[in-house]
Length: 221
Length: 270
Image 1 (tube, each protein chain N blue to C red):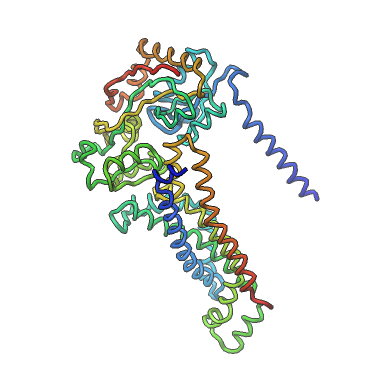
Image 2 (image 1 turned 135 degrees about the horizontal axis):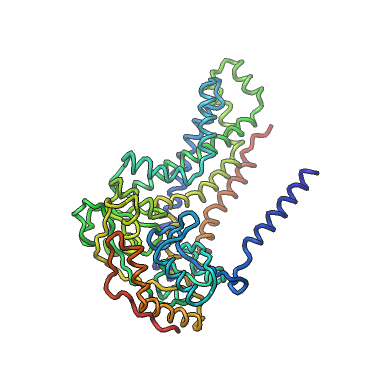
């Protein structure tokens, strides 16, 4: 096992998995919040656009989105950020992962918004707050606190979904796993266990933290 | 309640189907033999509709007939699953650009080699700037993630600008779209792509190999008797001229000539 760690940069590959996870988590949180606001806003056009986005993106396989980021944007449209292929693919993978998971973040937030009693929104409007004010002062703070569990689930799913980035050659852990399996089929079970254990180490704390936070930060009504 | 019962029934049926799908790994039962091949390598092992074509397929058919194993039933042997397929008796043997390596010998035995291939480069037909592995500096290269070729070229050309995909087909598309400058893997696979109808005249194999891949027939570890039979059949395959015919039929259209050392002398079984 030590030999595997010496020959292959397993920790580096997990590092890239973490980089993909964290960057895409931030990206999807930002995009998802915007889409969620569109979906709860009083403007019908924005409602429709938000719903359309969620329904299209959520129901498209992630592999398709990631491969399209490469084949569509890089190969056919020539939209490259840098000449370094590996770095370019990482950036596009983060973009693809962010837009995909934004749909789930949006729905998680919307479920959080639903935990806020309708009376509060009415009260906010009746004391003269605008839609923006009632959103940022009343609705969203409670929505985020109510949506911690589904957001945590989305984050765990995102962590594991980063493995799809291997389809366009991002050197994260599942790509390395394929390489190790190609060269060392004699220790295939050990390789498999290392990768599985690595993901448990990454995702288990997320679950524990979100469970803890969801009860600690829950809005007591 | 009724709904619940429907679900139970559905699960029961699904399980039964799943079980029957998994059964029947042995070859002794009927007159068919399960052989692992690649389904996605033109010229070597390609599934198109219900047909299988390629050099590996021809060899597999020859072996099945020569050893009277029965009608071949082809099973896709994805690279990462090859050892498991053999160990668990899901296939009798595998002929799928299966390079003989020491690590693999820990899990399976090999008869052969039946072909010596080497890593090479596939470039656009009008590209004169790439003449071999030493002219790759500053070029964009493509290969398959986790493959021997990808790891090998990164060792030979440190810091190479390498695009890795899940399949070679995507590499071929990127090469034709001028997004990468070369595709690297075994010359046999490259010749297969160059000979494909859709790529004819657009791509060429550079023809300067920089590795040696000994393709063998993968079979159950320690089954010396079967290994010996396959080896004898391989020797007959070479001497009867069938081998050359299969190579020319499948890889010839791209102007591919087998490299030095072909046809190889199969190693003794142990």
